[in-house]
Length: 128
Image (tube, rainbow, N blue to C red):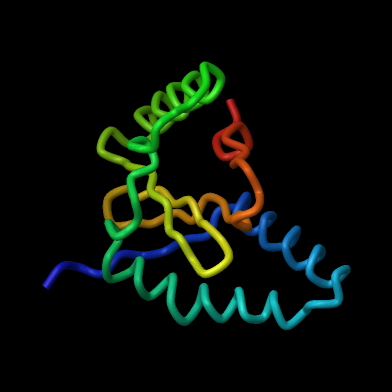
């Protein structure tokens, strides 16, 4: 059996959760945030611990603009400086998508966004 991976939350991921919580509290939907936390702790994290390669490879996603292509190239270079064999994957949830890095036996939850949000802030993931 494959070894269990360890899942760690990055500061950016925690900031994303705080923003989601604030938005849902203002929308008078605190139960939606509780459901998100339940999904993360009961499903997402255990799945990633056992099956870290289950998410779609982020860099296989087609880029549709020069700006996106340049951003992906920068992100690839930054990842290579951290870990030559690291990869970035997407985990699709019921209402959210999480971006995570798989480096050796550690999974780093990088960002989480609602499906209606359009992009990830790559610059804040690994500041220069």
